[in-house]
Amino acid sequence: MPIVTTSDSANTEPTGADSGDQETGPARGSAREVAPRASTGGLITRVVIFPMVVLTALAALLGTMYLAYVVDPEKNLHDFPIALVNQDVGDTIGNPAEPVNFGNQISDALASRVPADKIDLRRTSISDATLQMQSGKIYGAIIIPSDFSKRLGILGAGSVVPGDIERPIITLQTNPRTGAFATQIVLRIGDQALTEVNRQVGEQLTDQVNAQLAPAPGGPPAPELSGASRVTLSDPVQVIVQQYRPLPDGTGQGLSAFFYALLLLLIGVVGAMVIHTMIDAQLGFIPTEYGPWYVHYPTAAISRFNTLLIKWGVMVVTANIVSAVFLLVGYALDMPIDHPLALFLYSALAMIAVGVTALSMLAAIGTAGLLANLILFVILGLPSSGGTVPIEATPGYFGWMAEFEPMHQVFMGLRAIMYFDANGDAGLTRGVWMALLGLAIGLVFGAVVSRYYDYKGLHRKNFLAASAQA
Image (cartoon, rainbow, N blue to C red; front, top):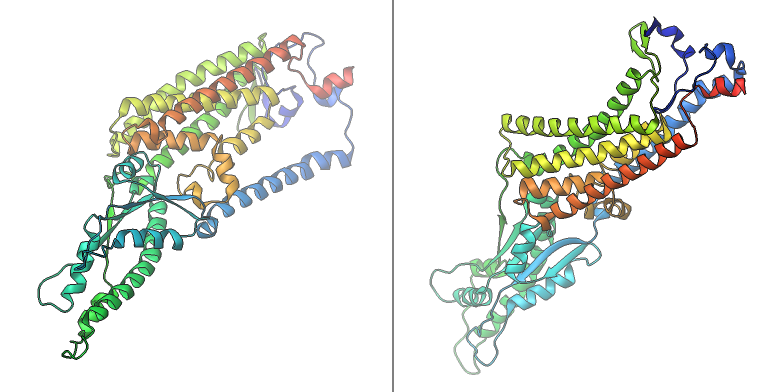
């Protein structure tokens, strides 16, 4: 029969960190009867000082991680990938003996002006840039068209010859599927770099036109450039901003994948805590409180390893149910879901991997596993996920953490499914393999530790009471 009493006496029942066989022996009494009375100083240390120290350290870690993550992305910018595509074939501009290629000049100027320690400017072809945009490997592209030099020459000639002309175009292409913050960085970099290049090209073009207008010796005076022509020549290039594959409605401007990943991680961590606590309560290892009362069931004769197997099984079944629930919620909210099967399977795999590892941590170190799981999966995971601020706009150590932190792997996998047509190169392949690796580590770690505890006879019992009896 379960023991039902008031919660004031709950601390008199022996509890433990994880499930296992309960040794038989003298009838269970309260810890007050068996354990020696603690000194006032020791009690104050355990009840007051120790929780304060733990919470302060946790707050310091939170403040460091989250403020460093968002305070100054421009200062932290490094290796931010942008493609530079120069398709310009050049032109003679009225002088076949001296062909020019303004596209090459602009490319060289951009490469020299863009800070190499902040921007990874990749000179590539249009086809390769398109492939990298499709897989989310670059955040944007600067595209110089094939007729750029020709149009620039026509603009120079049109400043003194009547007729309709069009300014040459450079396209600044953004990749909105990589996130709104990354798009803003691309726009800011493109505006700064292209404004300066435009000024230099304008000065060069003005000088060339003035040289062409210079009068021949003994000839008639040269015509003067009009004010409008000078203004046009000083700002000759038109920069067009274009979105590559704009996101549909219902994606939160590229944030839905991040929050979906956050949901999966929270269910994995919080779900492991709920499963761990509820199953331990039903097996009699911890009491369950109901307001001023609590219920403490008789301790079950079950090993730590078998208890962990039960918890793992519950986590696996629940993860699949929750994954289906998230899909239904997404459909109800009109969230675009082009690959429902892939989203369902990957979500379930991610929750199982996180939940199994979190349960193994609780089995290994008990209550302290709650804090360890919180730090590993949430506190360190959120800022290193790259879901809101790109990894390339955060301090360098976030990039190191992103190599193994679960939230980054889950976010990249979900982003590939939701925004990049379930493209493996966009992060899905890595996300799947990292989830399987995390699951394997969790299974091996939990099995080895729990079997070791069982082998050594380290059963669950009140440590203070056992020490006093010894």
